[in-house]
Amino acid sequence: MSSDTLRGQVLVLNVWASWCEACRDEHPVLMDFAARGKTPIYGLNYRDERAPVQQWLADAGNPYRTTLVDRDGSTGIDFGVYGVPETFVIDRAGVVRYRLAGPLTRKTLDTVILPLVGQLQREAQRG
Image (cartoon, rainbow, N blue to C red; front, top):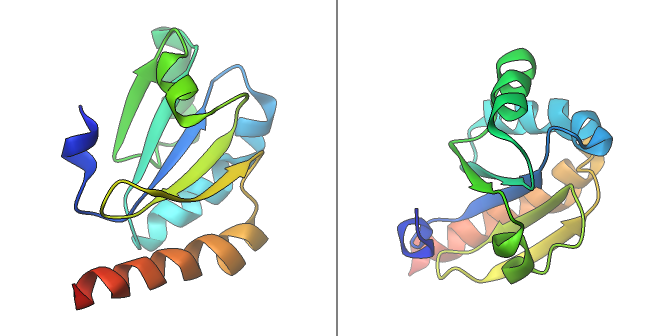
């Protein structure tokens, strides 16, 4: 999957790993966010192995439209990731409009992420 595939839509990119305790803490918030269906959430699995990733998503649920694999961390470096979890709101042009380093909380979801996603979607509709 390339960045061109993702252009043209407002989306959220969540960088996570199965070995990350803070990622486990934020996972219920991501599941709630995905259930609301406001915008697609893509996962970027960071420096992880396939088996634990699949097991964790099977056990905890999968909030992601697609999970991209960044086994060596190079894609994360392109985004400026220095740890997990990190969450990005990306506009239709592929521009990062918000970055959260650390776990996503319900408060941040409701007061920052969702309002920004709504604003970006309205801007996109106006053209």
